[in-house]
Image (cartoon, rainbow, N blue to C red; front, side, top):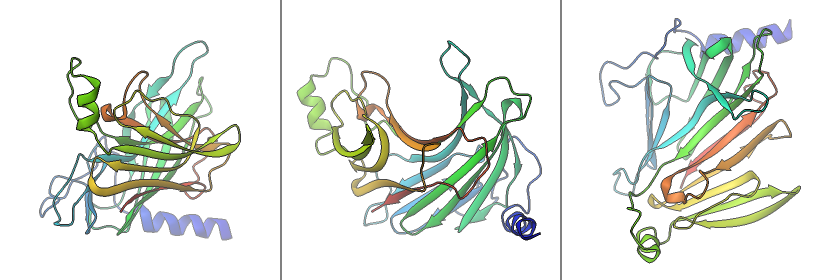
Length: 269
């Protein structure tokens, strides 16, 4: 009975509005018209689009947007047929969600990927950043089990022609740096990656700071309650440089919707 009461309480708080839909509804007036939700504070604004993408837009001390937006905690589902590269299952519908809103404290979305894979994602908003978490559930009939991911996309910062020499590339992204603490062979180690150099990341991600693309603002990521089934990684295309864009993503294969098991926080400071 106790577990049932908790479940019903969560549903009544987070899921109170939406019918099944391919898109989320939008606000029809105000600053965030056309978006499902908008959040505003001194360090950044955030908008949740009707396709479910959450964008964070850092601001400078004068309140103006700087750099490019970051996609934060985007639900993603992949699977691996034997002997093949990864395949994706796209989101086909949202099955439950609250009303469109301004300056929310928390938003929980539920939906389905292709082949009936259910998912949930929760976003918690604060003056310094956004915390996100989520989970998924495969149907019993599924042939290839899913891996559920929450993707944070650090954008391409420049367009640089192939003939531009390395010295000029380094000048364009001078001071741009990725600082990480990664878990390699069971030990935590610190790394730095310059934006102008071809990069290969080293291990599971423990902490992250990105310096430069948003002027005086530093974007950081941290986590709570990660374990062997719930991990964070950095990813970049082979032979690419960070200025071309890269990912930080949480992934799990536990086949459970556990909204509070692991949490990732993106901070703007």
